[in-house]
Length: 178
Length: 420
Image (cartoon, rainbow over all chains, first blue to last red; front, side, top):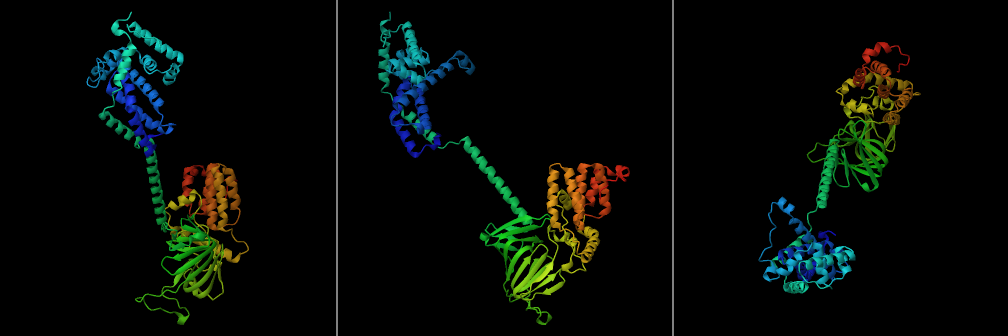
């Protein structure tokens, strides 16, 4: 539904949803952003703007937790992929950048909170493996739930998680089987 | 074997997540987010809106242009749409449109025509004349003045009080006529009705017209000369040829000067406009009406004489020409020139007025030009001999030149198929 069709009541409800869920979305995004606040805040903004577009089709606006989590994960996945693409040598050469711009030090939570080591580990994983691994081990999602969110089969999600664990183990980390 | 600092990655990640749990969107980001949401919820300029507005603008422009053109045409024809339920035609205004249907058209001769259906009330824009038209009636505008052409009419003329500064009422003929200086006049076919005040019933048929005065006094003036006083309750009748294609005054042939209206010949009043493209071209010609009169008057007088002494063989009315020309136009549009030629040939075998015959003859030549070049050349030669000063002489000459007839004339002069 077009945005301008949103009624005044819908605007108020979207505003209330933003007030209620913005920090939850922000924290999930912050994990995948390796602590980059601006990156995570962009995800929050994109997500709620998207909500404006689809709000008329939402069956139960008061129970948007699932939609918000799913959409946040997919937004993060897209953003991670885009960032990974931008960091490839060919693109950087085309853009005339010698290296990707590092995140703002002041805005990086990881550096301020000494969390860099843990997020640096996740940065080594491919985007989809990273999401599947975190969703499974940190958020406690089931394989089929992750498959529904990312749009893949359970077998493929299991494979993604196994590959992520193998990679981390190969890097010297201890990963206990769930 | 993992090193001690690399043990329990998941525990470290959970600890990091726990640390992040205290993080919140900054106030600056919140302001940005709210602004973005407001923009998203506000009606954005969409391409569809632009297309819609472009369509609305274009439609408005077209309507404005069409209105301007229509208004200009009405003004050119002496018509004025007052943008009220009333319609103004020439010097009359049609009122009481609830029981009346009024359609303005342009006759083939170029004069505006107003066709009325139902019961229509008309009032004169200046004089105190009220006219009621019943059923199907028609009037035309000649020089900005309306002339009743056909239908049944009831005319009520209220007594007009002359202004204080006006000259005193004049009476002529020792009281025989007692018209006020401002006696109203109503144009009728071949006649003008003058009435000071009173009520007149008028019936205008195809050829027969009648005027009956039921109150007051009035008179009919035929051709500006013969004046007939109307007797109360006694119909005054006169005949005219049917008016099919009304012409502006400058193009109307004068009536037979020596004949009273009742004996006027159809040839005197026949239309001069041709209902096909020839008419359009004819209208653009530089021929003067005087030239046409000069060529047509002898024929008109002769026709009038024939009519007077041979009433048993009246020419067909010009109104009968319309379906024939319509049929010919249809056939020509379909490319069936032979059939059109046959229709015109059969039509020419009938008795018509001189001008109608000239029109048919020209039409036949025009069809032949598309059918058979040699026969068309012979036909044009005949046409130019038969109507040397006719309305279509110049067009016949141009068509002959176009067909290169002069070089072929000698070869075809003895063709037995030469058409009249």
